[in-house]
Amino acid sequence: MNRETVLVFRHVPHEGLGTIGQFFLSAGVQVEYCDLFNFIHGKFPEQPEDYDYVVSMGGPMNADEVERYPFLLMEREFLRKAINQNVPTFGICLGAQIIARALGARVYTGERKEIGWFPIELTSEGKQDAMFGQFKQNRFTVFQWHGDTFNLPKGATLLASSPAFKHQAFKFGSCHAFQFHIEVTQEMIQSWIAHGESELKSLAAYVSPVQILSDTKQLESSLAQTAHQIYPALFSNLKQRASV
Image (cartoon, rainbow, N blue to C red; front, side):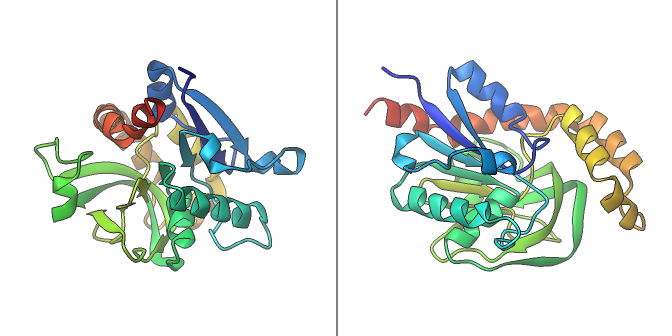
């Protein structure tokens, strides 16, 4: 049996797999990166069915900035094709927004940016979902860094919401999308704060990097534990496809 291969779209160098990468390593999964920030020097993947899973990571751009970032349109079409071909697909933050856009939903700017640690709450469907139904609690504290949001795609099931952004997680067939960051580590958050220094300064009225780092020390391990309980269900299709 060949090793299962996951295609990962990265939009900026500092937004990597984090704890998802740890899970893939322990599962013996082969990861192939399509680094879109270096796309001018690379080759865009052609067929989604060549992969056992497709993952789209976060990034600072808007999902519709296709003139400035032409690769976003190419990625959107690839993800649409993957979903139509029932190739398991997962998007985080920008990745979730691109998936929503690929499914015909609108992506737009929220009332104000959500940066830091915030609670999300499962919907009634989320409580019954294989990923979240295993937990006794219906409320989780997760890491957020986004200003954009999206409408729920037609035919999708909403799994989680937050007070500020209603659409935090959804599924559509074998596709899942999380607006929040489940994959982060303390090192990643420190790096994001460094890269986002100017953005954070503009939001100083309600976003505190010091508070984010303090919260991270307290909450990182709990999120990582939750993530590693979710990953086997989220990526269960890997073994199913490999056994076919």
